[in-house]
Length: 143
Image (cartoon, rainbow, N blue to C red):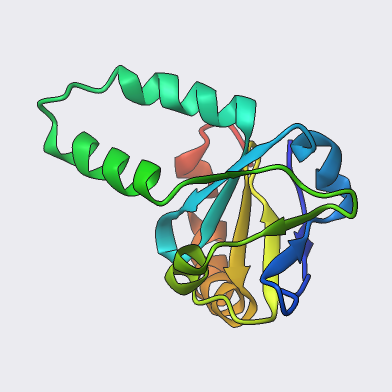
């Protein structure tokens, strides 16, 4: 499980140092792809395979499923972090997420998300009030 928020920076070679707490879970390999709200999703390779298997169950006749899979897989790249826990974020993915230098790396349960730091702060500020209001509706029985 991935938890927390971290503030690494992209270096001059477009590398990002993964938070130390995430490195062991991602050391064997990972997949980076486009996420919703203009962030990047980083999946442990095994978890991405599980998601892929679930998506294979979607009917090929579903336009929404086809569209989602095309964007998800066409933008995906696989990486293995180096010994310092760095990954290279390809140019098309940096452009998609608006990444320049300051990033926010957040734990999102079974994946990691990479955001432009300012975009994350803006998103978080906009969502915090509705988060408090929706918690009971999203997770029945959770206060």
